[in-house]
Image (cartoon, rainbow, N blue to C red; front, side, top):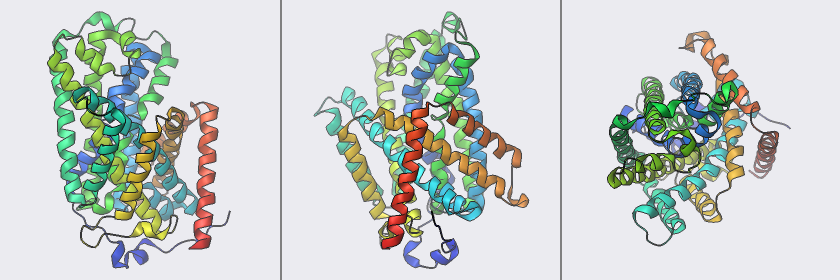
Length: 428
């Protein structure tokens, strides 16, 4: 397949219409990262991990967080030098070649779009428990429309809305920790590793995806103030905060109800909260879960639209995706298109297999991140090559642990992307 090198970023940026506004502070950037991370991972995936590993999934959680940290440091190192929309998509072009660049961008879009539909449905289900009006699907549709519209009014307003939503989630989870900690039962931690090392390893792969939202900060890099310093700080703060929060919440949940009950529930934290015989705690967790899903959905619309913007700028997607609203300085076409796709997915249902395939595609994305970090000049490598090597090894190990069918579908999706790219290049 033939590729030609496109114009450099500096040449493209000369067009005034493609410039975004740097409006996000360190607090805003951390909020975006936490909003992207704290969602289905803590409220749903912990139960799945508990089923394959028992209480030792707490170890898997720490290992998954460590691998995510290696990937995060690679992303931070790259974003400090290339603070542009698109994240790894941009790094692939700058440090590797168009094949790697496009692969990263396309895999990001596939992963986040497919997950966004499920997140919207999840929000609808949780919100319906609080206010049973209409139906979960109707609530999901309304949420997608409102968040899409909110994204149109500028990154600064979207950032503040995200901080508000994330604050609700953090308060609810903190309340759960403090309420449940005195009731933890040591007996619920034995046997600690009933499925041995293999169970812990499988839980690592499952839980890794609970940490992957930090890349959203790099994807929005073109809208972060003082990006060379802000982005690395934001990514590191986000990952450390997520590891601490996940560990405390998971420890309390296991201590309250044990992993057998957790694994049998689609909402393990809610089940753990109900064991406290306090309707108020249970209600707080439901509110927190709804807010978490809403925060993830908001961050996904932000990230996906910026990736479309970056890919439109390089003509890997149609050029209209690079259009910027003259007043609000946001990629409004990408935002609208993103919202429309999520609406379709939210109303069509829960495509579980597509989401599992998205796990493979996002691992390829992070793999390319680490490869790009390895290609940086030595004076740009803040954390050394060893971190990127460990991050790449972790991504490859988890990718090959997925079922062959999932990997095969992921590869087909990748080649489909290249086919679409070649058609776009011919008609543009």
